[in-house]
Length: 214
Image (tube, rainbow, N blue to C red; front, side):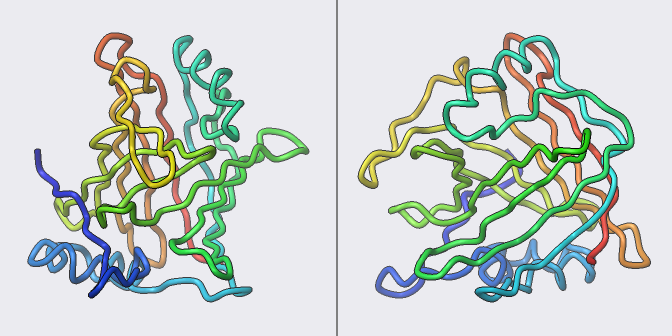
C-alpha cells in the first residue's frame, strides 16, 4: 500500500478543510507533488464563492457490471455515471456549505442537453480519517500519496455510516477499488483520471480528461 489514511482532525477535534490540511497530513510526500498541484490543493472555496473547473472527459466508460452498480446506487444520489462517451464536456464545482465541514464536489457531465450531476463531499469521519461521502451515509475511506509529481487518492474501504459509526461493506458489494489521480500538464491544465476495479468483475468504471480553472 502506497498511501496512508489522511487524518484531518485538528486539536481537540477541530475540523480542518481537506485541501488546507493536505500539506501537513502528507508530510514529506507533499513536497513530491508538482508545485501547480500543491497550489490547487492549498486553496479551498469560500462559502458562496465556489471554485469552477471546466474541461472535457476524453473517455467515459462503464462495463455491464458497472452499469448495474450505477442503477442500484441511484437510490443514494447517482454517485456513478451509467454512461459511455467520448469528448464529454464537464464542469466541476468545489463548494463550501455554511455550517458543514468538508468540501462538496459537484461534477456535471454534459452527455446531452440535460447534464448528469454527481455530488460528493470530502470530509473527516469521527476518527479523523479523510472520507468521501455520497448519500445516506454511504462513502469510502481514502488513502493518499504522491508519485511522479501527481496526487493520488485510493479507496481503502467502502462503508455505511450511521450516527457516526462506520459499518464496513464487503468489497464484493462495492463497484471496486477506486483510484483517482490529479496530474499537472502545464499551462494551467491538469489531467483527472478515475478507475474502479472489482476483484471479481474487473474494471467497472474508467474516466479521464483534461481540465483547467475557469
